[in-house]
Length: 178
Image: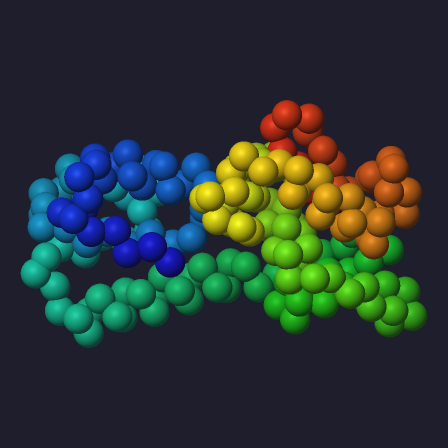
């Protein structure tokens, strides 16, 4: 979750929200002294999940954080994503095949797989994957992704050299094809 204080940033708040939305789906709650409705509308239209005007009551802010957390956590609890012969449970963080056989994934492999599965059919750009998994200092390190995605394919794809589900979009990123 991102708590964005528009008064503390030197940048345009709406542009900050758009920039965040380019690489994360984390909930964004805006804190601001600007109480005009056009400021609220602009922030919400840019991708903020809530807008709290200052001065605010801490109990109210905590309640809004809980509410946004409930909405976003229920949106991502879908389990049982099928990937070929495997069933990936996003809640339990397990990958199970026929006969109850389990695939062991490292935390890094899991992070990459989860990001792809949560956006079925969508292109997930290299920079989004690198930033979410390793942080902003690794945005240019696409070789990391090649190694880990190749390992995921060996573990989960029936024909790793001709993947059916974990698709490379050359020069752009990766996509999960259900």
